[in-house]
Image 1 (cartoon, rainbow, N blue to C red):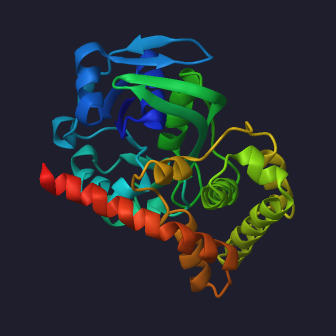
Image 2 (cartoon, one colour):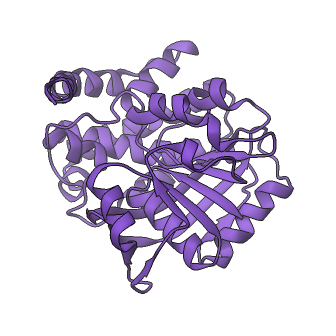
Length: 316
């Protein structure tokens, strides 16, 4: 397959690398020093599953240099979705499948105006990986898993081709019975852990072992389950219990990317995580007091980070 990875960071870089190693024609869209390093000496991956280096078929910051592909895997942070929406056009022909792998639940809706429903898929992944240095991906843990489907949740020949390609690359991949439920189940866990952890300014071990913050985490999950139900999403009856059980398996010192970005003074995915719960809850008249509080607590730091980033960009 000819596959473009839009955003070759920790997640996109890992999947692009293993797909290229498996013999697929992979084009990476990256920027800055990371892109320069990939062009110069390829993309290296350090992983418990084995270290390796690949040279992708193309590495660029301009989708026009790639042209139409069979599939586009979008693996940017939500704050970069507007740029993807503006740039994705040259990568598509009528048969192209676009699969977003973001942590929120509505990336496909953000991309829809530029992509069109006939090309728009849905997807999610589970993996912990990062850009350790320009041109270097470090896969920290969790066996890579990816779920995808067409916009309507169904499977198709092109979805099956991408699933097969991922399996050939050593990734557990599937078309789940209900992609929307799978997206919201992940959101219930990631968004709650990210928001509550960032508000507490402590790693997950401290959050889950303190009765008051553990209760806050549980109530945050309950709110997401209620918003999902209000939007017609069929989560399991034990979704919150499952979420809490999963939270108990994470490394005690772990933190979310949201929390790390805010602590580092960087623009984060606050709007696509906690902000989305508040926004989507309002559309179905579901109160979200925990997420509303967490959003209010974190928003000043987020706005300061955005202002600093904008000032830096304008000063260049």
